[in-house]
Image 1 (tube, rainbow, N blue to C red):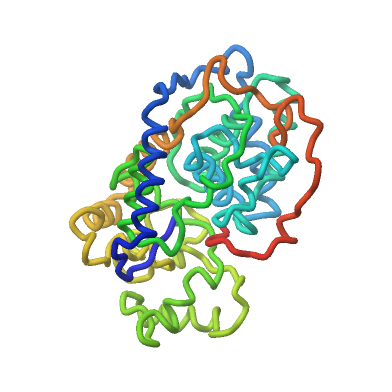
Image 2: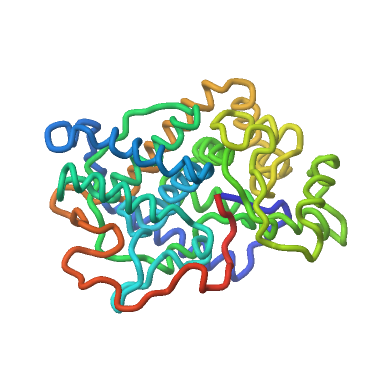
Length: 359
């Protein structure tokens, strides 16, 4: 989730984007409202949440940023044709994996942790819990285990049997301006307060130098972004020298990088938003009337932020879900049931890095 603060005139590309987003919105609203329930597994797999948390804690011992990565997996899955675990599918002769779409390639991570969670859940409750629900539970657990809010996750999603590579290519990215972000969120039924509150997930995690280096050296006429705190600018230039390693990781929140709190918003007030998307929520002149008040409100009251974040996560988790007899419960999150498995393998590290964030 990110943007830039330069102008975005309506060009042919803009019109094409609007048409695509309108089509996605129509597909979204044509589907029936999800019938999810927090008690869905009470009789069939009552310990599923505890199993997920146990596996996440094991993973976090060796990977302190895994919680941020897992919530991002859920976000990118839900924004791509709904929360049906299409992002987890590997390449096959029939499926072009979303993992290699621009916003995910060499960036989205945590697939092996989801595999471990799925294995543990299958050992306890075979054939019961969908990969889509595992992603939803893992997202909530990742936030709560990072000292963020807890919520009861609505469950009952089923897994899709298709991937949507082209749809994944228009996920919100770090070079979108706020107007484009608003359009992309609106296309899946999310409003401005959802945009600002869900952006608060950048209160933990990391981003690579290339996602913001233009702000440091050549934002406008060879000058740095004027909406960037000058002391913060100097520190970022040390970590990301002009012409240096583009993949060095930097904390999205320089104050409490691994804690889920509201420091993200106070950072924006102090002009220390790492990505232009982040800082634009407060600083872009053409969006002050719609997004800046929410930034200031969340900065002033952590509980208000937490409540809005939970509401946004539940709304996002309800995007175009499959329920009842639709979809399936995959035995392996990487392949659809009945498939012989991947027919060829493309490893993420073998594909040139092109994505926006790595959290």
